[in-house]
Amino acid sequence: MSLYFYSVNAAIAYAICRDFFGEYRVYAAEAFATDNPPSSDPQDIHWEMARHAVARDKGYTKFLQLRATLQTIATRKAQEGTLTPAQLELITEILARATPEEYHPVIYVILRSGIGSDRLEAVTDKPRDDSQEWIIHHLRDDDFEVVVTRLP
Image (cartoon, rainbow, N blue to C red):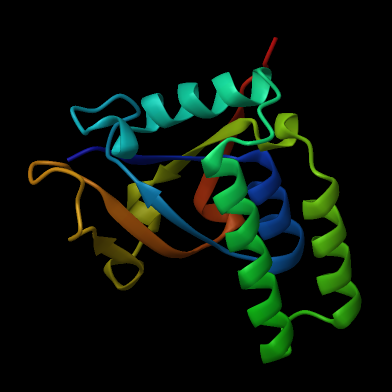
C-alpha cells in the first residue's frame, strides 16, 4: 500500500476550488505512473494536459468539459447559498476569460494516512477491470501538497 495518492488537475480548477469552494473532489491513484489506462494514469493525464496547454488548444475537449463542470458546481453552490451572487459572477468571468495555458496541469500529492475511509471511495466504473483508482471526497488544502510544473 502506497503512502500517497496522486491526482492531476488543471491549475484553474485548483485555484477556483481553493479560493471559492474550500474543498476538492479528486480522482486519484496510488502511484504517479501506474499500469492504469491513460485515462486513469496521473502521469499520462499530466502530459496530455500539458501538451494541450502548451499548444494553446482552445478546443481541447477535457478543458471545455472542466470549464462546464466548474461552472455547474459554482452555480449549484450559489443556489445552496455557499457562494454569493458576486462570487458566482466572478467565477463565471474567470472561466470565460481563461486561456488554455491556465489549464496547465498541477499534481496533488495526498498523504494517505490523512484521508479517512469516509472520504475514500473505490472507483467502480473503471476504464479497465484491473485499474486501481479512487475518488477522494472533501479533500482540504491541508490534506495535500501541490506540485506545479513549468511549461515551455
